[in-house]
Length: 108
Image (cartoon, rainbow, N blue to C red):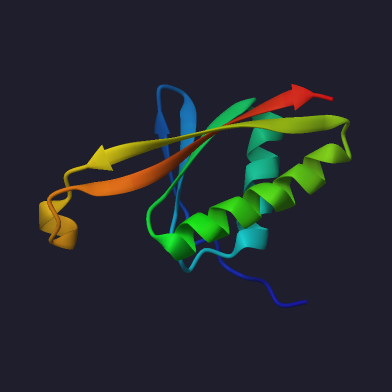
């Protein structure tokens, strides 16, 4: 079985809540496994994505994570939102919209 890297998922820690920053090159299956493992250790995490491919990978990753978590009689509550960042130096745009998914582990 070929392994894929999670190198395109940047993980940071802000106020004890982990933030996954997903790119268009992130493997959705690896992201789903990372989400499931993280939610088993801590009950909340945030996933951020910008761009259509990154958003698609995020949604697919959350679907994979829900399948894994369901084996433990749990589910994931998902709250979608957005954030506007000023990333002029990094991307040449003044404002950049980021989709933010807050995930919380809940009993079924």
